[in-house]
Every structure is written in structure tokens, then in C-alpha cells.
Image (tube, rainbow, N blue to C red; front, side):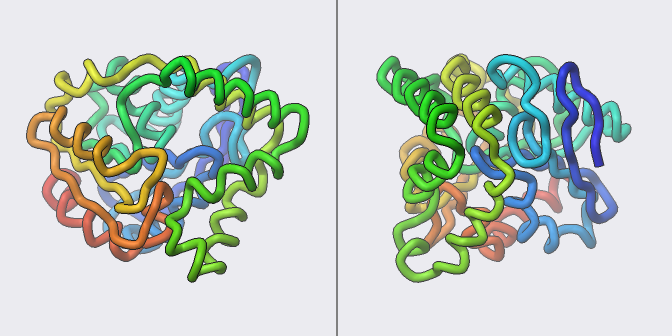
Length: 264
């Protein structure tokens, strides 16, 4: 299904019924990242999965896909679907978006799930590397960027022993375009430091991450959990930055008790 947000047509999928959970996928994936999880939750929850602008089946619009743009897309989606309050789940860039969404629309949150993400802005060196990657996306095409990123997104154990999962993860990125990748890379490079935001979050929160995550290592996940009052921390074994996709059963076991408390 599609809806219009500003200068872009965006795609979303809804499955199940019950209290609502809104899922935001990592870069450079799509809503398909969440299917192994939402298929286990759909008997108890209405699961809403958005393709962030510029990714999956969503248009990029004009200019960088900044966190404020993504946050307003999310607000318009909630209005489109008649969602007042929900549990919001964000992985990687999805977490960056939810920090911005919290600053703008905290009244919408019944609970917060942060997955394999972090709060600081990019350092100067990280920002420069992102901008180089955006240029590669435009000049060399999406496949080159995706193949360069895959080893950092999946646990070493997954890459070594589970080629089916590696290929399935690659397929969630199959609709990526040069424009969409570059727009999101530049948007992430512009994002603000959300560390000061952590202390303002006063809703039930759980932080979940892969024990083998490279972009958001365990120390970053611990800082998130310690920075948010009362937040829980759960680590997923044999999983990296794509922990929810690599180990969906473990992920659901970690998430379900939290959902029973805050979204029933």
C-alpha cells in the first residue's frame, strides 16, 4: 500500500490485528527485513512496516533523506492509518528516526524498542566516509555499495555458516537505487547527536542488539540502555547488526514479554 508524504510516494505493509507496533528497518534494507519477526507477532498485534523514503518501494523525493523528513513521513503514516499511540521499533537508521520522532511527537509513543542503533552523531571522519560512500552509490551503482556493506551488517558466524540468510538479507535490499542510497547516506551524515535526548525518554524502553554487531557494538547498546531511565537490555547470540533478521526467534523471545507489558 502507498501514501503520499511531501514530495515522495511511500510504501508500507500492514499484517495482523491487535495493539499496533510500527517497525522501521535498517539501511539499506526494506520492510521485508521485519517479516520473519512480524509473522510471529501478527496473531497478537497489528504490525505496520514502512519502507523509509528512498529505500525498498518508497520514492526518495528531493535532496537528502534527513531524519526530520523521515520523522514527518512517520507522522503522516500514523495519521493515514488512524494510529494514535503505538509501540515503535527502529533498527539502525530506524533508531535514528525514532529519536527525531520522539523529539517531535512523543505523545504517540506507548513504548520504544531500539535495535542495533546508537545515539551519537557521526564524527568528522565518519561523516567524510559516508559522503564518499554516497558518491560511490551514484557513480558505481547500488550493487557495489550493498556488497561493500554486507560484511559489516551480518555476524561473522552468519556469513560463515548460513549462506541462505546472507542471500535473504541481500534480497531485502534488492530494490535499492543509487538515488535512494545516496539520499539516505547523506541524511545520516547530517543527523544530530541524540545522546542528550536519551535522558528525556520516560516511556517503557527496551534495547536489543546482536552480540556480534560491528556498527553498533555492545558498548554502544549499553550506553543507550544506561542513558534511558528504566530501559532493559537484551543481547542476541550469533547475530550482528541485522540481529532481528539473523535470529528472529531469539529476537521475538526477547521482545514479546516487553510487548505484553506495554502493548496489551
